[in-house]
Image (cartoon, rainbow, N blue to C red; front, side):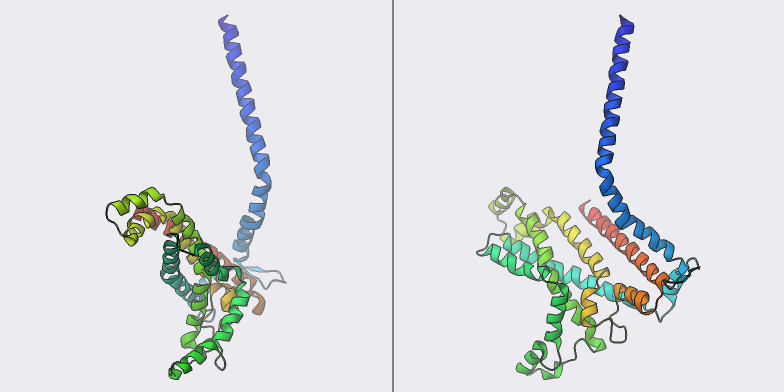
Length: 309
């Protein structure tokens, strides 16, 4: 009798193992298309870029293996201006984090109070995000135009003509002329992310704080903002990595000029690939961009974790 029970138990165990294996195979088969797509679109290009960055290659003839020479040249050869491009991208990131995100948070908190016309304001603020960056760039080119641009005309109208500039053509103002539309365009994007978080905060918490004598702004500061810190963290990551990858606005407004003073890594990458035919160096820049984006994302996540702890 005991032997029969043991056989029955072993049989049940084998059936469970087979069932678990079958479920595992089924899950793997369902995930396989997405996995292949992920590897083909993301992982494989990164591996190829790392491999190509080790070569002196013009994109046509057989490349020459040079190891890490491209990386060394990237940081030591002043004519490439990688450090200048990185500094410009970091300036854009700085204004995105410390100007764009506070404005987005302010608007999200304000609209989260059920103001009149809330949906209308949401649509208006989000509209620039829906418009192509090419269109936004062309719009701001007209604003910056030194002859008939709205900005110089406005300065004339308020008797500040001495402040007029060729905004995208002067070294002193070109980078700022890129930062302003970049910050303006994506305020609505981050506002919408934060607004969703603000609306998700329980009204019971708000009412309890107000019963204790807190003002609306104190409720926002001590109740709402701590509750939406995960969303703020995501917005900071998006703002920084997006700035490091910025391309469209720079390409349209200044094309990296004047004298490469507004170059960013993405426009420098384009320059290396299509103007200088240095595909090895272009791959090196792309690898550095990937590393920097991951590094900043990890650093920001760690900083928020330490603050929460």
